[in-house]
Length: 335
Image 1 (cartoon, one colour):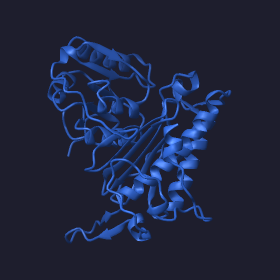
Image 2: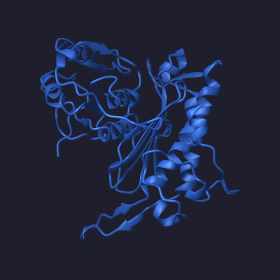
Image 3: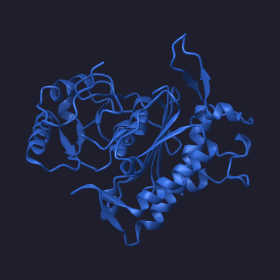
Image 4: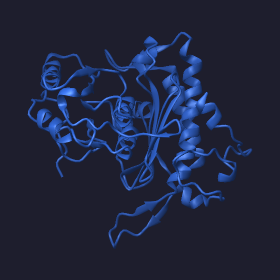
């Protein structure tokens, strides 16, 4: 398999990577064979022009290597569980979590925290246990969804993934999305393009809404006000487009737009920043646009996302911004 070939490498007895000379080679990155300074991996604090808040600098390419390794390990866990019976717990009437979610998040967290002990970590299941989403600061922060598309995983629908992103100075700089069932690895580093299994990808060039395919999701709510608002948005978009898809994974939906399989994806009320962070970076590096459905800048903490190719953004936001929201749906962020 692609990931098995990509991720063959050695570990030190302490579980750390030796150096990039023994690390996996990731296509599409400007990686040099040299030993890495531990402080650069973890993040150098840089004075922010006299402001009290600090900014940080990290080695994005090294962080990508570690993220891919973590995704591969979690992917192997998902594949192993794919044909087994699953212990399912309910976070809500619709929202599910399995032992595989928890096992994968611990596995990913152990790798990242061992390699980058000074970095922050925001994981979906860890956050659920806390009862609130931690604040995203300038400090290097990993945003992890161990199984994005848990309902698909439970039902044996092969559209689930591991999603890992790194944000530095509150900006996502590394994104890794891995579907272990289909063995598809998407990755991107800030300024270096987006890749699917060693091949550079780009968005579609569709400029006509009538020939486009869009993706959306209903999420985990089924109350009448939410459904009324959600179907109002769907009707408005469907009237202008060729087709609608609902695939059950925010990260993979964004990657589908990034590689041209779909032309736009939107969702309001998704789970959290771990759902969109990696996929949004991959989409942007593929030449697409990730923004708020109302047209403003993307806020990964807002639970609102629109991803399109560059030519459909204004048309999509024009449609979506005119649709009503349910009383307690997340609103656009105001700066």
